[in-house]
Image 1 (cartoon, rainbow, N blue to C red):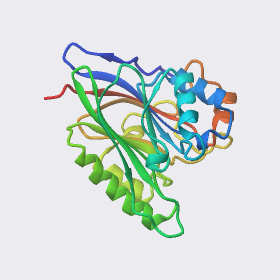
Image 2: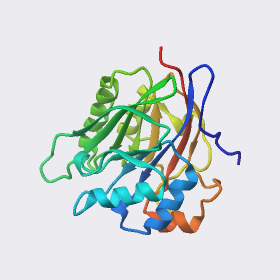
Image 3: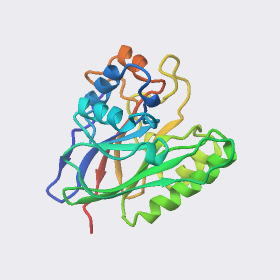
Image 4: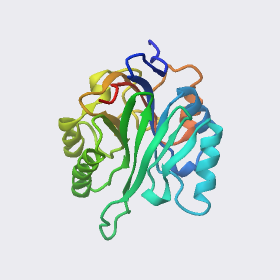
Length: 249
């Protein structure tokens, strides 16, 4: 399996970046293995789902970021679980955590969002963890599209744990408006759940039409990533994408 290209800024002002999406199950598993997986993926941006939300949650997330040579950008408890990490290559314009309407009896959900720059390229970013309940999930898919458009940037990405498969209503709603990065340029492996028995794709990265997708998938062949670490780190497999972001106009 060919490796994904490395991150870089191009002479024309465009930027090649790596984006990782990963449900980390509140860091209840082997955090050393988790940090090794993230580090081996060499991401510029990490979209985290199920970040720690309770006692000393900031310290826990900061410890993971530090172990993976990253910094916390936004999210965590303030977004009801989604968080965004980034490396020092990233220039941050602004961030916003958004709490979604609460359905009585169900978990609170939210989005972690940011507008970033990589050299001459400008990118909107949204991290999500959608509902287990199908009707609420579908409504949240519409809110995701509205929020992504509301970031006010030409090029944007969204990623996370959708709790839905590609044939599902919500997944299709997103894929009808955005590029499903795996479907556009499949790389690595497809299924993200579960590490012990990969049989479904419920985690995904999406991009607006102007973003060039160079490859996207579960990084099973990435140097430094072992099956042992993937199984020990959390109950999902990560999704890694290489994207070329055009220069801002």
